[in-house]
Length: 206
Image (cartoon, rainbow, N blue to C red; front, side, top):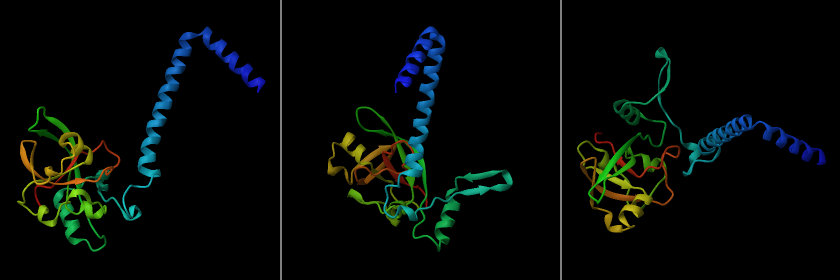
């Protein structure tokens, strides 16, 4: 232990004689620690920590490939997704989703919100139920159906003061009127890897 303390004192003396080198070393260490922390946070959330959904070990992610073009992973178009869903005889549910930002207007100040456009099967697939209201139904997914939206619990508390009367009301997103049909339970987040999602809407075609 005495040898360790002696080495530490020696190191401090040497670093104090070369302040420029010391500053660079400290910055490099800080950047390295920060990068490692960020990488671990992502790996922990995505790979190490179990997904916060019921029967998470049965969930799979499916995507398209174009090996002739050297593309190993690409997003499927809606028609391709619809074919997978309609011809599926393997999975209990097949759901599609894509991230989209929305501008919420109608209050004092417009709010920019991160959202997801999803198919009706997403919430049954995740075994997710709303805290109040309901999730999307097959009727919501049909072509020409009215625009509907499910709010996150946080958005419900922050913008609507946790007022249950928001169910059935209309809100304006990207200059279009949506009917609020549900509020998700507190703590629910999908996708878990991205920035917080504040609302979910359904595809405008089916």
